[in-house]
Image 1 (cartoon, helix red, strand yellow):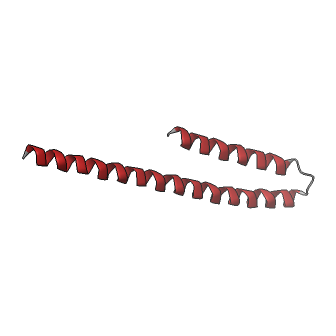
Image 2 (cartoon, one colour):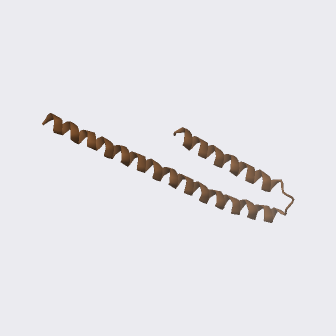
Image 3 (cartoon, helix red, strand yellow):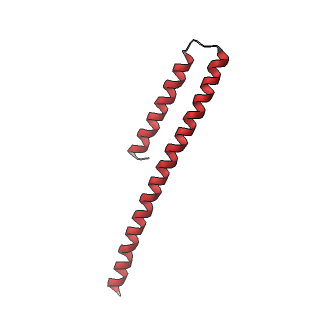
Length: 82
């Protein structure tokens, strides 16, 4: 995993931990606290899915770009050899 991926995972983990601790220490009934935790976990799950999807799209674009770039070099080398 590259540095950007590690940073994203660390930030999301920190946000999740902070949200859960904030909810647990809030002066609400147990049922309300569980609802808040459930809702917050759903929100965080969606955020993580979006971030991972975006990361994968960018990575795929970079790979495709590099493959296209390398393909051009390969074709040029073949033409020079022939």
